[in-house]
Image (cartoon, rainbow, N blue to C red; front, side):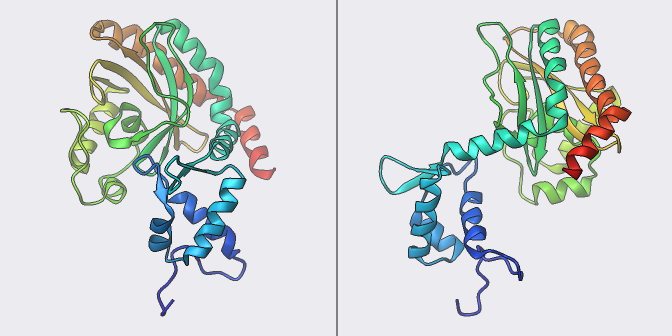
Length: 276
């Protein structure tokens, strides 16, 4: 390799090269890059094409990638989704939030969700869709940008400006609506307004016609581990109701989940998961 460090070969005495290379291939896929050709993988990971062929064949047989119709490109397969759902199901916060979110949906009539932060994205880990014909279209596993979403703002309450600069980088933030903050400083200003209010809300913040109210969930250490929200896909939403009964129900749900996570029973359950 002419002294150039191979990005798919992390150093370490106990590293398994084939496994690390396979995981490096899977890590190349993202929301913005859902299909990749073998030559791209070989070039970017600095691997021989024969090695990439064996890795892709193995991942395909195991269901972690699928070959596209053009026979050149690959996309993630159902095994990745299954592993993701298994991880989500293992989270205490998701497990205990289910009846709380279902009740929140039934009380408000709005779709209820929970999300966690993964880098600069939020990942939906729980969802109860509204009974209305027109409703939120996100699914469990959906990823959206932190800076452009109300739940992303709720998840960022404890972040400093330096934290946000490291998270987003120096470039201007992608715009999704007229309300999307373009810089870390603008995002922090929105977050500070939300914290002072006690909850985050928006109308057409990420997508036109979608109204949302969100609040963070904390664990026994006081750290924000998730955010919950309710959304309505409607051209008209009664603002007074959104800032009264909808907000009260949402904050009550976030408080119920936080209370369980910080209770003796919740703490012991989390410790058992760690030990196991």
